Amino acid sequence: MLENQKPAYITIVEGPPPDFHDVANEWSISVLEGTESTDIAMCEMRAFDGPKLVKRCQDAWREGRQARLDFPAGDGVRGELDILAIRWEEVEEGHKVYLWLKI
Image (cartoon, rainbow, N blue to C red):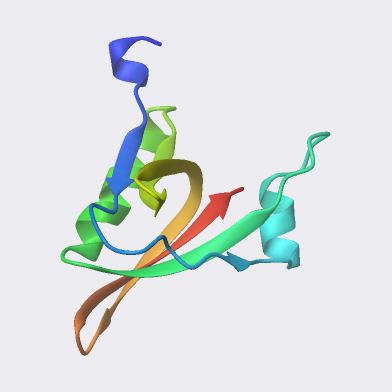
């Protein structure tokens, strides 16, 4: 992989593994049309700077790179999943980020 082809990462440094929710709707299915069977999940997480995380993903996609979520999977193991879509919103506690992931 060339240096400029490295994925952009959103990393969950500590805490429990994210809670992934199955997403079975027309929008999510249409994103990955093709011969390969793929499931899509969504997770929510609090973030310090939601707009910055969205921009990181958008910049990677614009450059033809992947965006990936790096997260604790339990027992000291790390997991990685491709990010398909992201959005953020402001909530009382700060920012909340929603990620749609290829699982």
